[in-house]
Each structure stands twice: as C-alpha cells, then as structure tokens.
Picture 1 (cartoon, rainbow, N blue to C red):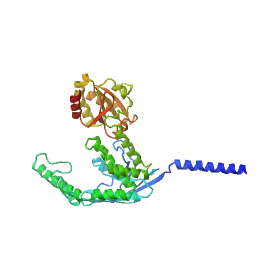
Picture 2 (cartoon, rainbow, N blue to C red; picture 1 turned 180 degrees about the vertical axis):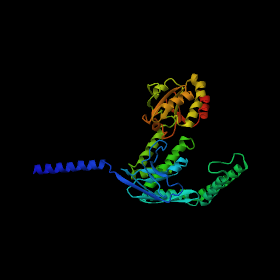
Picture 3 (tube, rainbow, N blue to C red; picture 1 turned 120 degrees about the vertical axis):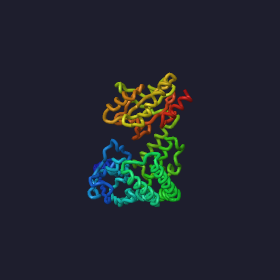
Picture 4 (cartoon, rainbow, N blue to C red; picture 1 turned 180 degrees about the horizontal axis):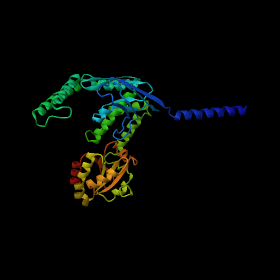
Length: 411
C-alpha cells in the first residue's frame, strides 16, 4: 500500500515538474501579416517590421517582404504579445518614418491601405487589441479633412512651382504667400482640435475598455510626459494616466509595455536633480577603465558629456564646451566625455582628434556598459548632465548656453 502511494506521489511530482517546465518555456507561434492597397510606392518597395522602440538606424528588422502590386504577405515567430512597427522602405529613406503599430498576437492581421490628401490611411482586420489600436488611431484624425485638404493643396502648389525637392526662397513673395497659407491651415487645424472632443472620448474609452491597446495609449502618454519633464516643459506627470496605469498594471503585469513604463518611471526618479549620479565604469581610449565616482573627486562641478561620433548636434554641444572648460577649469570645473559607438571606435577617435576635446574620453561600445539606459538616454545620441562636488545631479541640460549661465552664476 505504501509503495503504491509512494509511486502515485512520484508520478504526481513528476507531472508537476513537467507542468512547471512547460509553463516556464514560452511557446513560439507564427505572427501572420498581410496588406493591400499600397499605391504610394513602386512595386519594388519593401515592407519592414521593427520591434517598437528599436533604433532603425542600427537595428535590423525582424521581418520584411516585397510589395507586389500594392500587396504583401509576411510572417515571423514570436513567443509573447509584443508591440511592433510596420514601415515602408521608401518612406523611411525619404525621412518621413510613417509607421503602423500592431501587436504580435496569434490572430492573422490584415492591413487595408488607402490614400487621402496624399497620405496613407489604414483600416485593420485582426484581433480585438489590434482593431482597438486602430480605433484610437483613426478616431484621433476624424474631422480633420478640411485642414488636411488645405495642407495638401499647399504642397501641390509648392511642387507645381518648385518641383519635389525645392522650396520658395526665404523673404520672397512666394515664401510670404506660403507662410500665410500654412498659418491659415494651422489655425483651422487648431480650431478642429479644440472642438473635436477626442481627448474626452479617449479618456472615457480608456476607463471603460481595458485593452492592451489602452495600455499602449497610457504608456505613450506617460512617456511623452517624461520627455516634457526632461526638457523642462512641465513639472509633474499626469495623475490621470498614472492612476490608470496602476489599474492596467494589474491586468497586464508581465507585458513589456508595463515593464518598460515601470523602468521609465524608475529612471525618472533615478536621474532627478538632487539624486546621486548613477555610478558606472567604462573603458577609455587610453586603454584603462575608469569609474565615474573616481573621476568626480576633487571637482567643484563636473560636466558628464554623453555624445556620439555620428550625432551632429551632440558634437556641436561638445565643441561648445571647450571654451567653457578653458575658462572655468581653474575654478574646479571638469568634463568627463562618454561616447556611444557602434561596431568600432575608429569614428570616435577621428572625432576626438578633429574636434580637439581636451578631457578624458570613455566609451560605451554597442551598449555593452549600459550607460545610455542608466541615464535615460535610450536611443538618443547623447545628453549633458551637470554634477556637483558630492556627485549629485544638478540638472540635465539641452544646450551649452544654459550651462554657461549656471557656471557664471555659481563658480
């Protein structure tokens, strides 16, 4: 009897282990996409799919397909419902970066594209979450036909007079006419936005329909608030979206949107003025490895200059720091440069030599050190932080003029 019970217990234990193993291993499935009606590009155009948040300058698409007579079919494998962006190659090459979000669930997703006033329109047929995502998208543009038609006619007028790639000369009669037309179209668009009622509709929908599409809208709103706070345009986050996020988190605790927003909020707290600057170690061009906290010792103030050889605005700001460094270094100012590079350090070395930075240069090659994530820079080229003598963050600055003003007032 005891042997029978022991054997049953052994079988039960084995079944439990097997169940645990099967639960802990995500099941891979096919994500199937199709589309029709794309007539803005030649048949040689490609459709590309990127993970949402990917840096399309460097990251490879997870899937691609060629358009054939304005249609496409494609698929890729996934193991969890994530958010992706569908883009068209020619659109990307023109610098427009028009994208179409979707969730990688198991239901086949079909895009039906159209054209209105020179822009792509889209409807989808797929899962509840994907259809809800496009309900939000299309509802937000509802009622803008008058303004859109005005912009369309302005673009046609410019193209007829100057071709696809030219523009009225600033100060000319055509330039003044163009500006007046754009101002008029902008005023119409602002009036429509003010009276559209979309914001109220969206908030009601987020409360009444708790979907993954709703979570995406909430997370996007929080992300925009965080960006505005980083740029000094607002002081706090919207309590409406924060409160809703807490409720949605209980519904989607493990979704990557939830996890990414949790990380974003933690990051905002981590790099807030008055907080200790997150410490890190990184290699330098001289072959040694340095820790930030060590480089801060003895300085009255330290500029942490995060830049990249391929980021023009970053290098401009870095060059503008040179005269400030020469003026204030005897008063205790120091600069620590950190470059985010890809594949090799050749471009960084060339930039340092050409621009003539006189301070130590560390690097984060291919994101191996995680410094950009640590300082909330994500896929940005860089950012400038001012740190005090105790290693606490004074602030993040978007231009060197503000740094110069702070140094003038405090050193």
